[in-house]
Length: 280
Image 1: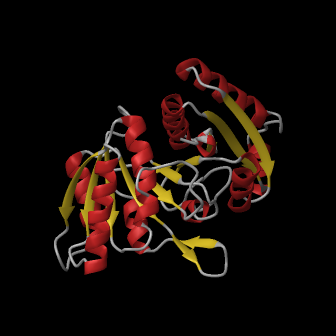
Image 2: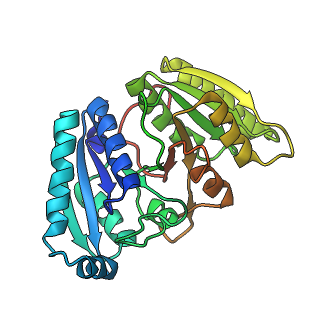
């Protein structure tokens, strides 16, 4: 299995509590995935205003990152580096992902307004600015890894790539995948769910399958189902915007990403996949 694409996990931070939680979750994952963590802070006009208001020297950003990196190294026994960029977090995260070959991003968010405080960015735009999968983290702490993962299936397009990631994460964390199929599934969607179940079985991944109620809010049912399982992760797929090289999230995705149960959500942007999954 080629795991090159997963050797580096990126954590953008504004030094808030929720970003600290994202860093801790990334470190836990890095320990199991044998990955390195890179902390990123993007300096913009709001950063400069914050430093001025707090009477802090520009070098205090590096000091803070050094302190967090040292704590993560000590607590988790992993390799941690940090990086400071200047510009917009929307473009800089994507650039860092490309420059360093980032495999995964952990993004702490306070709600729809994402990295508040120093950056003032919007979480949804950050999620769609990078080709690397992004795990959106709220304040809920990381318990014992990703043991129960919910995989919503709404169309025949896209689920196979999501399944590749599901298999990879499930194998690393010894997780159970819970397929959640939309109630009004067409034959192609139903067939896709059967194919996914076959792939999971072929790769020796534990799974269950449930169908949502018809004519009800599917995203709410996804969250309610995940909450009833005390799930550790929900996996969704973004949609590529034709011809523009960017990705889109709809209201369905937003309701899941900012769920009140604060279950982490892995948002997968379509990309070339670099590790082998049997039968895919």
